[in-house]
Image (tube, rainbow, N blue to C red):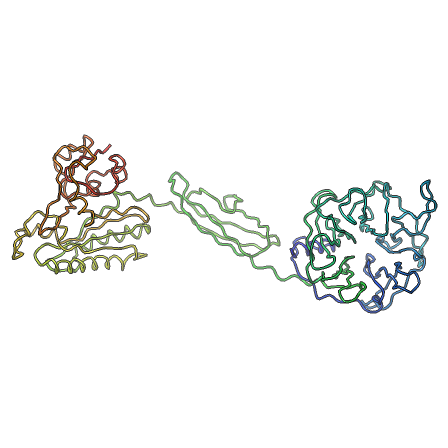
Length: 609
């Protein structure tokens, strides 16, 4: 049940502010013995000042006026109903009931059961409908019939309610266009005359019955009882709000299990801060109950927060704002310092933005965000960093190496989406096993230096390669491991190399050992690209191992070839090294040359444009 909407409806009837919040109902209370008896009590109607309660009492079998309703009333004394009396002037052997009062209390509207009418079809018949009785002092005058065009009620199942301004009546009966046993119709006053009944539509009317209508003071909320809308029991009380004309209503909402029981509940009304209705939840016949409208709980505080997401157009649109609002009472009114009323402003330029949020009961919240210009995108060229070098048999970070590592630290802190891959290497002056251990220590030292200085240190991964990827051309094949390499060549081999990449991008690491084996197995006929020199089937080997050169400078001849739009790979070159030397992005090199991976055979001719 939408209790917020219900309380708004009730409070509107009492003239409260429309932004009041939902409270709840107290437990139902059965009115005392001065009102409720073994007979059936229904149709509670109050005077405008709530001092007088009118109701209908249907006498049990065996008493006078058997099964016919009588009109009774009760006056409040010290806030309590202490006794009740019948209004004998309005009671006869027919069914009698009050369904409305004038504001000044000078008249009451009753079911018409007083005058006989004559017609050609019926002689001296009782025309069922509405009547009004004027009151002089404490005496009620004989009720006079209210003429309602086309109203023709058959049977005993019908009821009325008149609005507090006495200009609108709701009648329940089986009339023209009825969907079920009783439907709701509206009758409006046009000048001094009443209109014909108009069916109120199939949103509130069902194939069951809709009875006991009751209108709020503002006439925009209708309460009624129905057995055709589902609910707790035999019949439940629902309410619906007017959406425009008298035939346009919101989907009915059940008042909930505090008001409705597994048995019959109907004849709803309210007075002061209490609601009244009839129910047979505790006995065979209906009694009149009431419940107090409890004060609503305090509204949740209004809280607002905002985050900025940068855009990547770099054309004056520096960021978007995503605003989050919690608590308060909807709807919210939002106004930004740039006069935008959007909840999430988009494509904003650099600057400070403040939003004032006001909820439906006047609570306010303020939030300010700063939008900065996004950093320009990092290109592949920006990701190239220099290798660092180590002393013989050492893995300590030298001062010159630390300067290079500090550059990497700055790049990674400025670009938190960047990841790093590193590979550490040795010369070939010791055993393969010793060199592999030493290279792993160099990789760990290099990675640790950076990890301790950046956010999200998990962005670093690396590997030690020992002497398997020498880049200096020298002889390492002597049996006593006394290399013929110069010290300069050995220094080039004692290195850690770095590749930076953006999260999610394809890795730019140098060729793996598995790829090396694939290259070694490729013959000249399998190369799909045009070659200008003889294709070499294997790369250079040392001690039976393939050597891959990853720091090959551009020769004078290659520089001329690049100008002419092609590149011929040298022995040991990978596609990554071609990218470094030509500055042509890897994706373009693959696309232009229809390559599926980074594997290259020496002597391959690559087109650059």
